[in-house]
Length: 181
Image (cartoon, rainbow, N blue to C red; front, side, top):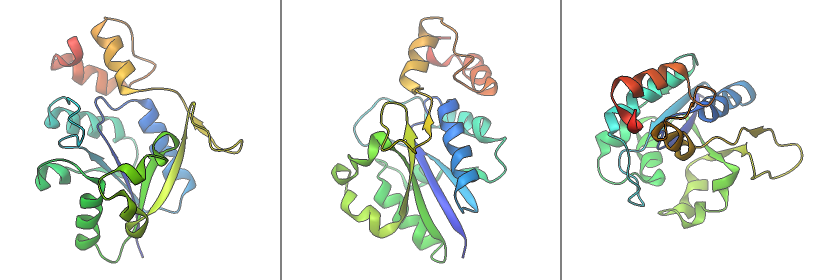
């Protein structure tokens, strides 16, 4: 049975915390593929950079990871992005796969408040990634405290973000005038 880990997010822009979390999942979990899923339309009306740009930046960010694939499924589904709807579609599309959901420690407690969040444990197993400031225990490996919000702030302010974002993503963002560059 194939095991696929779903890693969703806004990826606006994707940063090294995302890449490190993906690397950790692929290195420490028995998964065959990591499916990176940029949200099409944020369920909480969070303003997002155009989907096509976020898809391209995600493809650039995760390109070094052999087992990672970026999917445009949520754009094809259209409308607001809900994890339950995405998982239902993926399970119908590939019923023989075992599905995992990559989620940071900062989000675990909020899952019951997501749209039909109570159903997520029925649809997949959680792969919880330690996020700086949100440790579950001393044994957790914590990813660096990097956020897309901080990256966007730095880029808009003309401050360096080289240590936070893959070079190819920064080059793409600059070329397309994203984030005030």
